[in-house]
Figure (tube, rainbow over the protein chains, first blue to last red):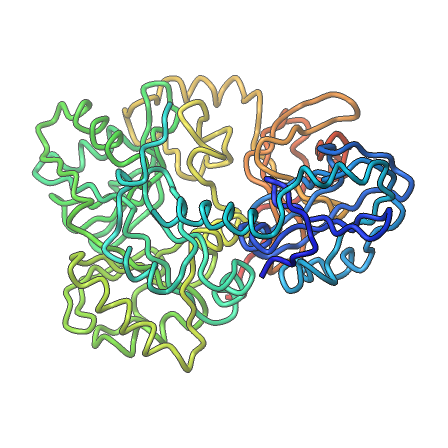
Length: 132
Length: 369
């Protein structure tokens, strides 16, 4: 379910690092918790963000959820397909529905984030709380 | 205030059914309730175009009986219950002595000596205590929520679906009227009421029959495209239809005049809780009014966002979000009365930006008759 080459935050963002570029999205757990996504606010290309800064927002019918950047760097690309097809976040959160690409300042920053196994356990715990 | 532990959440008779249907469950005012099954957009669409079922068994029922039943109902509510015929219901407000809302409710008249109130789930115990406290008439008051399960069948095909399961002719039941009837061998109160802006029915019956009736309605409605609907769609449907939600548009600080609910506030009916203050406020005019607005960009207003006039904050959004059928983003907000004019441009503060919006007429959505 959760790709092995991604790193994950406690706020349910993922980052895939290829060289000095981090591709960022929200996880399947996050899209499921939000429900039908109807609007995505993307950052501006060129924006500089620190890890933990607000990168954008994903809005479902019932709630808005801010997206926090998992890493520090400069936004180089945004997924403008999501402006016309925000529902892609529900359908394909780990691939085509990426939100932004960031040129990373410090590649070692991502190593502090959860790996797929740890994140899988983390969301399993959350789901257990939900159904308890 | 602390949230009760999960184990303390109250459950309806359909709780395990919802879980078997893999509904997403939430703590709704202390009740473990389904927020969605297949998705809010699909459920909303089902109710606007076909038919949807809602478990609304968490709603409270309070029965008022005896020779003084009408006197008590008249004293604690703002609408004029003396105008109700047997078998008729109306929307009303349970009033504080200040003329603000303890709750909003439906009052059903079974007879001159029996009124049946349907109140909000999370308010029912407080409502009951309030009615008992003001029962200087000696009427009998029962907090009867535990005796009733309730299913709402809503949408343009609702009548067709329910009619398949009952011999009671449904077409003659007018909007906001009700009757006793038998559905699938279960004794029910069948009311042509709802909270979605569509035609439909709400049926009340003993909780032990809840699964049987739910299953019968789901099975029988398959060819009509029936869908199980959660509280998420219930909220988008009521907002789109311009209906108030307690704790949002109305609470114990808001009056019917402010909430655009003057049509349920009958000061001419005689004395009732809050009447003097309501007469005064009507004469002096309100200082805030509930406005409906529509966003003029793709940004979405949410509950609690500030309303702006230029740079200045002039009010607060009480409910905001997408209107899935209208494909617009809408909301309610309290604003100064001078702002509450159709077409007035306002701003909504969305993530530190002033998002353009304009005041529009309510209801946002009105079904074709």
